[in-house]
Image 1 (cartoon, rainbow, N blue to C red):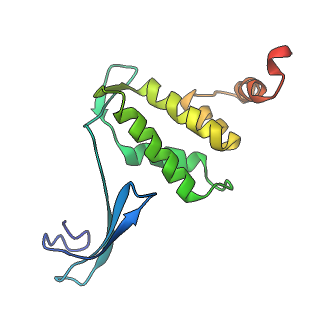
Image 2: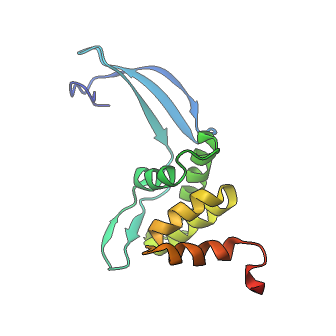
Length: 154
């Protein structure tokens, strides 16, 4: 593993332990060249996923990109970071278990929204506002109205 501080390729693992509900390994590393310490995480990857955007463009699936957007939606919400990480790992496992390597971005967005709706409605609405490209307050009103009990009866 290359040192992020000096670029040395000969770093040493000082400590390894399970992380993220035993779906990753957390490694503390030390660089003998500069003395820097840093942490890496190792996860199982079943297959290389490719995201197919709505415009047809293809790009490698980036767990960190998805994670960032979820964490932004969940900012300052009363949900434990471990719970969010478990949700993210579950989403990735679900995507990998489809058996497909090409995953439409729409499918990823829907799966993320489904997972968020189960743990926090505010995070769900925040994510949806970006995913569904809300343009004004009416878009929020319509979306939130669908969340309210009895909305179908109105």
